Length: 102
Image (cartoon, rainbow, N blue to C red; front, side):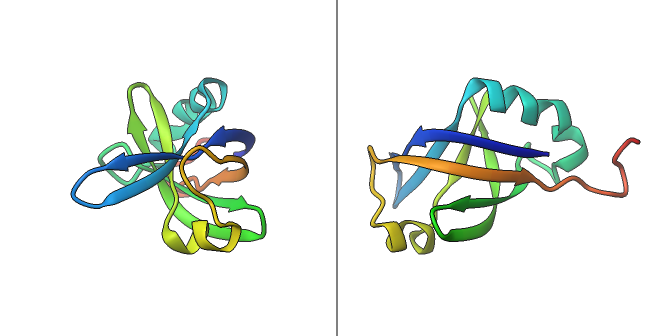
């Protein structure tokens, strides 16, 4: 499943800061439809994503009925991304081929 969306980078301050892009509701609903085929536990959903020229693999975190796309420093540094920046995301949910339905 391929998705394209825009969102603002947010910062969560825990023991160390983490950065995410919230997946908009419409795309979160699409992810929920296939999450059972994709998740490997704890509700996280594996994805391949691209922001600018950076392609990366990660897992969406479930949050309040939606999902958060984590942004490691290796993803943020090339575009000098920080909290509040608007980004365009291209994302593919990686479905588990063993359980995918035709």
